[in-house]
Image 1 (spheres, rainbow, N blue to C red):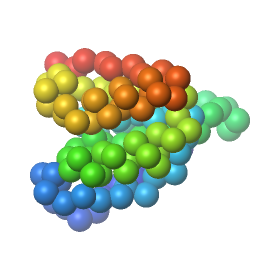
Image 2: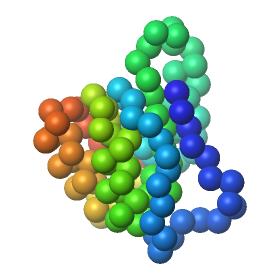
Image 3: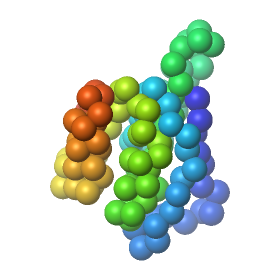
Amino acid sequence: MHLKLDSSGSIDDGDVARDLGQASADIVVLSAADSDLAAFGAAHAALPADFPGVRLTNLLALGHPASVDLYVERTLRDAKIVVLRMLGGESYWPHGVESLRRDVLRRGALLACIPAN
């Protein structure tokens, strides 16, 4: 499992495109809630060593459309399952949702969009 943390201490407002540098994995989980990512990370740590690779990403780091496009191209490249936990619905991250949806449909992967309150 690979969790990329940004230690800059600032919140990405989408003004700057960036590459998170995550390699691709079989399962990719995106959420804006650190508690979601921590729970997925703890669950993955309890699984056998030969369990498929997992990548966890805070989607707040993907505020710029070019960041989303690069993430889809590089990190989702081999993903068989993409889990998106959305706070605020599709209108909160429209380019991201559409990019993920288009990518998984093109590749025949699975996308689970989980609403959050």
